[in-house]
Amino acid sequence: MPAMSHALEAGSKAPDFEAVDDGGVARRLSDYRGKTVVLYFYPKDNTPGCTKEACDFRDLHAKFASRGCVVLGVSPDGPKSHEGFKAKHKLPFPLLADEDKALCKAYGVWKEKSFMGRRYMGVERSTFVIGPDGRVASVERKVSVPGHVKAVLESISAGVAQR
Image 1 (cartoon, rainbow, N blue to C red):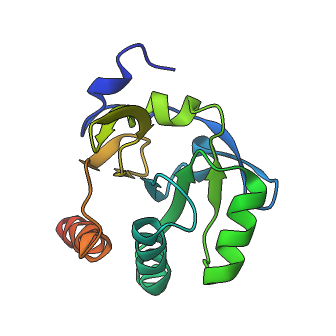
Image 2: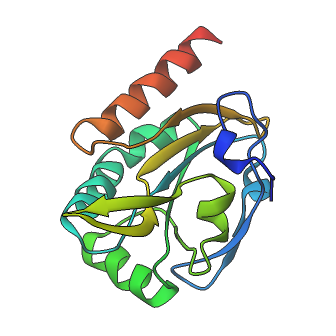
């Protein structure tokens, strides 16, 4: 884990990880070397914003795949929760369980948040596009869900077109 995880930005080497997915399969970032990885962090399965974001990734999944991209969702929920969430919404990509928050911390998305005057620790909705070379190509933090997934796809398409 990088010591300065909060400083992760475009150009940084993406921290490798191992996390179990919704089917109990251990996934590592290094497994996807040579592909573009869209790693998106969300707070919780089956909540309105997180469901909308996951369904937006589902609806554009074929377009991401046609550009050689792998989509991986990450939240602190466990594999069983992810399994139900994925089945309910027919999500065609893995959801990674980060119950110990190690992955969230490595990417600097485990943050102090505030709601109605109450402070607590939680996931800052964020998306990292990691290039085939294992470096962070782009970072979106404090994501607003409407239009986000389409914007990520457009930025990848623009990058692919420039190569």
